[in-house]
Length: 591
Image (tube, rainbow, N blue to C red):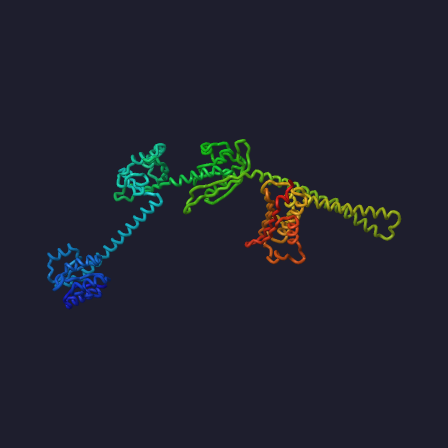
């Protein structure tokens, strides 16, 4: 501890230091015996305590006290004098001294120093706390101003209301004026006054947390939208309950939501907005035109009322589970239109989160009727192909096997020694006809088992390859058709089929994939065919130069080049192979 001591007698300074150290107060005592040295030491700073004699030959303690209060007001000041007296000591305390001690009673110097240091530390802590509080209040006021959020307190029993400066600004009242429920209702928009009054009555009776929105009508005719949230508290000194909460000016948010609604109305698909609980807030114009319902009619209907009864349970299950997870989800179902016709839609739900809290649900519904019809058509084709395959197996196991057996017997008979004469040529001709029948039977069975390049349906042709290869059932093979299918030129269709077939053969035979996807995308400008798998991929060197003795990759590239198409074959970083063929519409389609 460093002490500045104003004392002209060195011996007295030594006695004071000895008294302090005898009481376990170790200090570095700096003595000054005139005004100049005293002032210079004060300006140098770094002292924890100032001691001063009351009377000096060329200086005095009171003047020293005044200088200390100007230069180092936070440092405690104690008079140590033999000429002070109690009356002067009291006057010194009034001037700002911390304490006074008589030189004849130095046993009191240590307790006085400890008390002075303790009080100085307490004053310092209070000062820091005051500064921190002022800074915190300034930050809070600025934060409230920036966020357009004010705070309030409301004592239910007395009816007294407390507002922050920002709350005054939001309501447009002069700071310092007494807020009342009557003034709040008076500033409320006339259309919202009944529900606001009902809300106030409900809060008074139930005394629960609340979250409420309403409008203000300002003196200049402008309208503000407010969100008021509050909760009960028992922190008052007398233990009475009061509500504490926040008032937020959400006018800009409401304006942005309205602009978003207007923008959403021009989106050519069904769009809706839900609150965090899944209740309807808004549906766009396209949805209203499709169903023929108004927004109020939408809100009055039971949830999912326009969904097909057969799809209702599935949609409800997916929707309830999705809304509880706060994550995006989708489900397909049939939706009733104003023409009383159900059409397939893909419903997608996306959450809007802020700081992890759910704010809104935004949903879209895209019509997929044509896709569902195509899926149904493909399903029926697959059923037909299964039947053809069954017939082919029956033919192979019965008629064709019988012919093969008869042919073998005939061949052995004709090779028997002694079979000559006029009957042999006829038997040779019978054998030839039987072999021709076997060849034709095999071709017929092959045509029954698979759709070859002469098939008019590219989707059906390619979809049968998995079954043709007898691929294990564990492979998930999916076919997707996007856009409106268009007839293809015969030579182009054959080349597309051969390229697609080769890509699928590679995927099923060599990739060890668990999932294989075929996608055909028809547009006005181009036909895209994509074959993707999640298998082991293709070695980059093989992709670049091919594999000795194999021409599958090179053949696909040659076929694509021959018809003026582009083909890209790549292996994904995470595994799997992607083959994309792009054929210009003028090359692919019949016009």
